[in-house]
Image 1: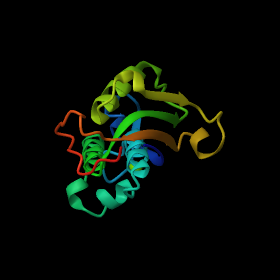
Image 2 (image 1 turned 120 degrees about the vertical axis):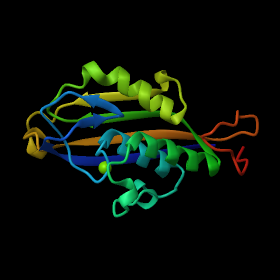
Image 3 (image 1 turned 135 degrees about the vertical axis):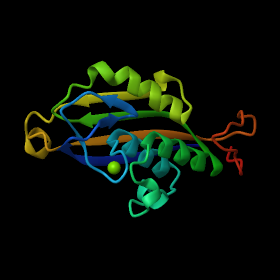
Length: 175
Ligand code: MG
């Protein structure tokens, strides 16, 4: 059985913040504002993975009102979300992400982001796609006020012969 999930996230730029996207620290004049590390790529992918399993969204699992998640490493949240998805009997097959921002250029960092996120959800790098594009100067993204990310993830049901990992064990078989 196959499931598909979609995730969206946006964050606002501000000066004197580190810019972390897909777990990778990117040199830039400004970073993103958020309760966690504001890693919009990781957040959108987390919502896609949770959504495919119909397990709610990132805000329900890791509330931004909880001081425990202040400055949180969003890749760690993605790993924990995937663990919960596996516990529910699913695992990630592949994901595709589109990042919309005017600057900086993500091209030099795409491979590092792919490797980080692929490892987080336990797939080969070739099954984790990241694409970046501008908004052609239009609107709030075009003015450089922030970024938006859209992610799609495909899950498959865990099989009893799937290797068990720290990511969690299937509790049910959905063949
Ligand atoms: Mg977010």
